[in-house]
Image (cartoon, rainbow, N blue to C red; front, side):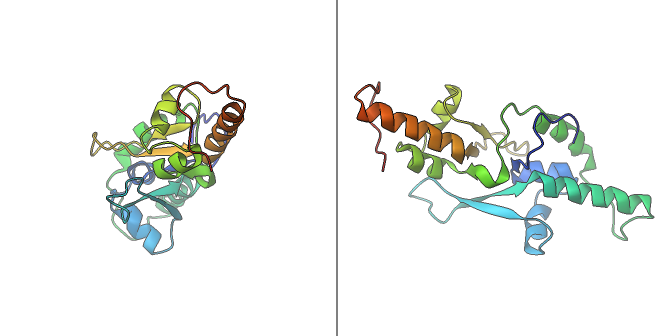
Length: 181
């Protein structure tokens, strides 16, 4: 990838992974089922939909798959039809490179997990991101612009919870007390 600030294995969403590999967004799930990609499932934060999950993928694996595909093309092709969404790759590479605080694949958690760590309601962590108290971002999904799937850094949430716990125990925390376990 061009000009990344940190060489870490970032967590990317399904649409982002599809664009980076130049495949249709539904192909990513089939690649995981075949064992070609690794994914992690993040649970839904809402009690109404506990069975709903969102998968995240490894940026390094997506880049390796794309590099293998390009290498196959150099040696006569893959024997299959060409990938149909290669044109979406340059814009997504640029968008991923523009992420100010990338979240590592192994460190990524959902809104529900972030809320549990922070001792707040599941919709509050996004406010903490806007206040730059924790690290998080919305995963890109250009096929549905209303999609707002957040991914957060577990380490930043744990650091914020620790700070908040100390302030709360010392009686110096401003605002409501958190339900920190």
